[in-house]
Amino acid sequence: MEQAKQTLSNPLKKTMVMALMVALSIVLERFLGYNDRVLSVSFSYLPIALTGMLFGPVPAAAVSGLADALGALLFPSGPFDIRFTLIALIKGALYGAFLYHAQGSRYRIILAQALVTLIAHLTLNTLVISSIIGKGFFALLPLRLVKNLLFLPIEVLTLIRLYDYRAAFERMMK
Image 1 (tube, rainbow, N blue to C red):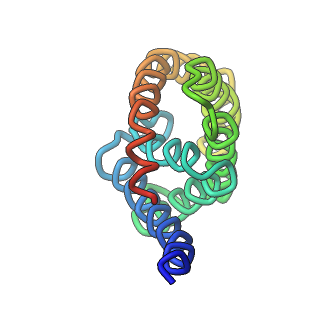
Image 2 (image 1 turned 60 degrees about the vertical axis):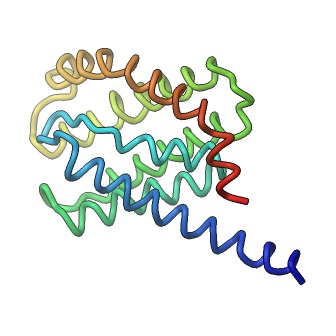
């Protein structure tokens, strides 16, 4: 009987943790981050990366996409654009693909953040932003490149630190 309760509670715990990660990501992005039309700086990637570490690429993509869509709809900073949500799905999937079962590999953490920065932040987001504000891709790229190169070490170090606490998070899930 006790085993059956644990089996039934694990999907509920997983759903609750994922909902908490969505809420935490929204708060970190919309209230504790800096956002303007061209640049944004926040720690909203941490709950998404943690979801990827604990549950894998599909749940991390779902958390990332939901956080982006709900954040944009509940606390808009401009018109809603589905392209940003699709990019958020890609970021979550990348975190999950590289950080789930990473076995403490700092190389995988560095690679995950480098790919998120290159694919999502520098390429896809810059393309979408350039089409929205009417400036060319290469006109926006230098400023966005400097910001992302400065923030990349901070993101990697915080992800490594988060990974150090992974076992504690996994114990809470049991």
